[in-house]
Length: 243
Image (cartoon, rainbow, N blue to C red; front, side, top):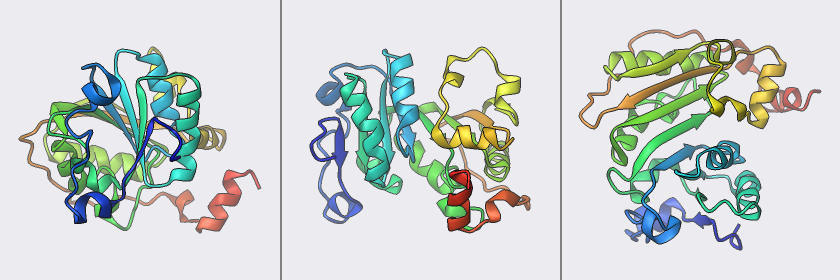
């Protein structure tokens, strides 16, 4: 990872506790990408399949995959570098430190793909009002947030949060590949997404705007847990490998 020029690695301690100023903050366009094209983030990017796929489809936009786990991120970072994708970079850090890496209004869109639904820990959900508050600090006014998920729990929670907060919802579907057929983004399928589809689990998708002045409200409703998520970590891993 340290040898890849398209990867930046800074820990929470490096930036937040020491008060260090990240050199790219507010200057990603001019200092790294060499243009003023819109910047799009993939949060919890894992192997970076979406960041790389989107960068190929949209050369007029810049994409940055963010995750704390470098071993998985290495896959996408290596592919982007070897493919010569100049509009794709990776940042290894905690998502809760996002405002220390991007200036207000520096980001135009955020993608959240197949995140852990965190059914018992609201503030750890990447679409919670806690994280939405962080996203507002870096997004342009009304910037887009995309959630693509196999989890009915996370999808329902996110939809209810957006509705309770009065956020403008542009697209919402419980079965993406049935209801949407003319979007080239659908051609991008992650490793885990293909596994969920193979198990007969529909893919959910919601896209909404996030106005800077939005008052974020947590939905006051009980949401049914995902039954297939009740397996322990070891059991889920075995299922993922087809065992």
